[in-house]
Each structure stands twice: as C-alpha cells, then as structure tokens.
Length: 507
Ligand code: ADP
Image (cartoon, rainbow, N blue to C red; front, side, top):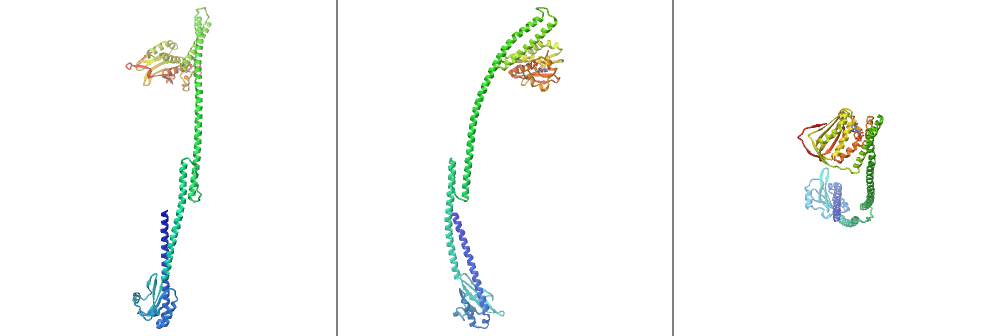
C-alpha cells in the first residue's frame, strides 16, 4: 500500500514539475515575442525622426510605449551609444556604459537579444534608413510578474499534489482494507469448510472480489453436492454389499443343501443299484446256468430249434449281466467307493495273459493279435485289475469292430509316464465322434454300428478308471483307417526301468 502511495506521489510531482516548466517556457517565449514586437515597432516608427534628428518626435514615440504593461525601459541609441531618447528622460543625451550595452555597440547590425531571462527580456533592433545603420531601438520588458505567477502556479501545484497524495493514500488505504477484509473472509470460510462447516462467504460487492466470492461459494456448493453424491453412492454400495453377502450366504446354504441332497441321492442310487444288481444278478445267473444245462441236453432231449432258442436266451442273459456289471462299476466310481489298489507287476506278463485269453476269439475271426514293448519290459506299481479291465475292454472293442487284419498293442515309456496303444484295422471312428464315444451309453450312430452289440459303457468305465489311476485315454484315427486308443499312465505308476533289453514281441 505504501508503495502505491509513493508511486502516486512521484507521478504527481513529475506532472506538476513538467507543467511548471512548460508554463515557464511559454511565458518566456511570449515575453520575447512581445519585446521584439515592441522593438520592431519602435525601430520602424523612429526612422524618419532619427534621420531628421528630431529628439522631440523620438521622445513622443518613446512615451507612446510607456502605457505597455511591465515595460522597464525603451530607448533609441545612436550607433555610438548615445541615448537619443529614453523612457526615463534623465538618461537622454548620456552614453550607455554598462557591460550589456557595450556588447551591443560592437555587435552585428541585426536584432540582438541582449538579455533573456524570466525576470527581464532586453532586445535591440537596428534602425536602418536607405540601407544605412542609424541607431538602435532597444526595449526591455519586466518578467517579474510572470515569475511571481509561475511561483503561484508551482506552489498551487505542490499543494494540489500533496492533497492528491493524501486523498489518494487515504482512498488506497480504505480500498486495501476493504479488499483485505473480504479476502480474509474468504480465507476464514475456506479453513472452516475444510473442517466440515457449510459456511459461505458473505461479500456484497460487484467488483472482482465480489465475483471471486461468488465463484468460491459456487465451488463450495459443487463440492458439497459432489460429496453428498459420493456419500449416497457409498451408502448404496454398502447396502448392496450387505445384500450380496446375504445372498451369497443364502445361496451357499442352498448349495450346501443341494450338495447334501445330491450326496444322499448318490448314496441312495448306489444302494439302489447295489441291491438291484444283486436282485437282478441272482436270477440272471440262475437263468444263465439253467439255460446252459438245458441246452446241453443233460435234463432231456431237445430238437435243434429248441437248442437255438435256448442259446439266444443264454446270450441275452449274458449281455444283460454284462450291462448290469458295467452300471454297477460306474455307480461305484461315481459314489467314490472305487479306489486304486496298487500292486507290483510287469507289463509283459499282463499282456501275455490277456492275449492268451483273447487269442481263441481272434482266431475264430481270423484276426491277428500281437504286442510290442519298446525299450524292454516295464515294471509297474498300480491297480492291475483295473488296467486288465481297461485293456480287455479295448481289445474286445477292437475284436468287435475289426473284420480283417488284426490288432497290435504297443507299450513305451515316455518322459511323463507309460503309453499303451491299442491299434486295430477295423471300421474306424469318424472325427466328429471322437469326443462323444467316452460318454456313458454313447454309441456311434451309423448304419454299420447298429450291427454291433454293446451298452456304450465300456469306454466310460475305462476313462473313469484311468482318472482314478492318475492317467487318461485318447483316441485317434489310425493311418490304416482303423482306430487307435492310447492309454497314458503317470510316471508314478512305473516301478523301475530296464533299458538294456531291446523290443520284445509276443502274441
Ligand atoms: P460298447 O459296449 O458299445 O462297445 P464302448 O463304450 O466300449 O461301448 O464303445 C462306445 C462306442 O465307441 C462303440 O459303440 C463304437 O461305436 C465305438 N468304438 C469303440 N471302440 C471302437 C473300435 N475299436 N473301432 C470302432 N469303433 C469303436
């Protein structure tokens, strides 16, 4: 604030000084102009009187100048410096001797500014007649009055400047106080709002501070609105989270109930199947036994048709028994009652036994069956019965779906474990059916397959058993247009290895 007042004072002072200076220059120029004009008039009017050496006439002309305000003196001088006529008659006839006049006597014959100051302007103009210099017309005008006027102007200027500075200072102080007070209000409200208050700035001004206060209040309104929305959203979020938690709890309870129900249903199903299979297997075994006895004609003679019919009933009962056994096996796995009973055995003995069992059936269809163990015999430690059942099922299928050629089994160790491939030269499997044949009761729906008996459970059981043993089964189309089923057993099923033997072949 002091700075503003000082700048204000300096500017005002410069302005007044400049004004006074200009006024002084103007007055001096005006004085010079007036004095020269008077001297010119005096010179022109006195030519004939000087030529005639008429002192009375010249004095009259001088006297006529007397009425001019501030005239200090007017005189006509001869070229030698003698006063021919003077506004103060006492000087008439005398010679001028002062320093200024002496300069004039030796000066060029032209207008001479003998003295130019604010207090006095003294100008001499040559009197010339017929190009002959005959004297000087000299006029001096007093500038004291102008100087006094200038002093008054300067003094007034200083006074007005001081008044302006004081008034300006007071005005500036009041302005600053007003601004500071309102700005302090802003600061106060900002700090109280940050502490949670909903106060607003009360500034009734229409200047920039007023606009600032309005903008500030608007900003606070927006902030309050935003935080209110945020609070509502948080509340909504909390309530939704609570609801969600509640719903998750409810669903969890429902799922637990459903799981318990499902477990109970599975137990009930297993119990049902176990009792049903028992109930069915007992009479079925009786049927199989009695039809076999009767068909063997041990209890009486039969004609050929009766034997054929009995054999058909016997075969149907066998098939039914196989289906019931399969269903029982699957239900046991699903109920979690089937476990892995690991024993030590070697692959070669297992395959030799299996092939021996199946060879008569293969021979009957004039098919070959052989196996190969790459890298020597392999000792295993896993569930032998299940692996037997899996390989038996694959060989039975290969036998069923192959009409010429034969089946070959290949075993080899891989970094991940053991791979056994059962490849036949049979009817093969379409690409689209590769995934579905492992589903329960799934049989390939083709004209050709309808000629084959089966339940569609064999491969399902194979896969379930392999899952239990930590393995898997896949099928691929054999290059010979047959099928190739690949069993994988994990490395943990391999008991030891013997890499010294080369490939062995059996069958
Ligand atoms: P099924 O008792 O019908 O043989 P599987 O589960 O063992 O039941 O086999 C399912 C189906 O997969 C069979 O019906 C057959 O269509 C197809 N399949 C299985 N093995 C072979 C194979 N070696 N060659 C061609 N098709 C096969």
